[in-house]
Amino acid sequence: MNKDIFQGKIKEISGELRKKWGALTDDDIQRTKGNAEALSGLVQQKVGLSKEEASRQVNDLMSSWERKFEADKDEAADKLNAGIDKMKNKLSH
Image 1: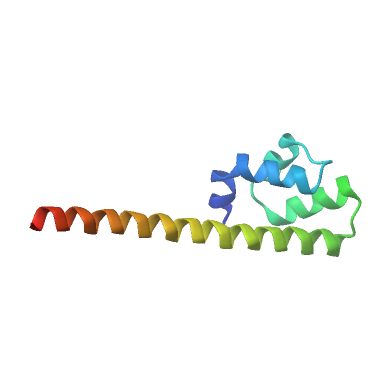
Image 2: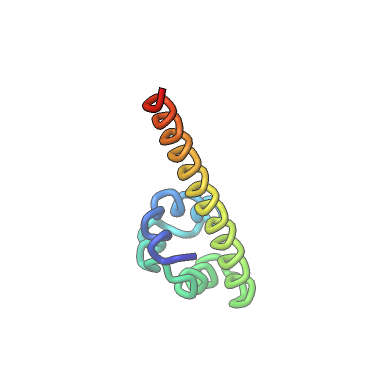
């Protein structure tokens, strides 16, 4: 996941991370600064997963967020374009 996306969505993401791995705190999550490797290490340490399993889970979760954020962005662009088309139609009549 793009580090800027992670930082921009940190509050939303923090809640989901705490739901998935209850041992994590907001401060823990903030300290990772969007770094997947740092988050994996934190999950490994706090939750007690193997390094490989923590990395797999973090990467899977970040990939799902990336898909979600991309879909949200596409939906917003579609709504904006529909609004622009509507305004053009009103102006042309």
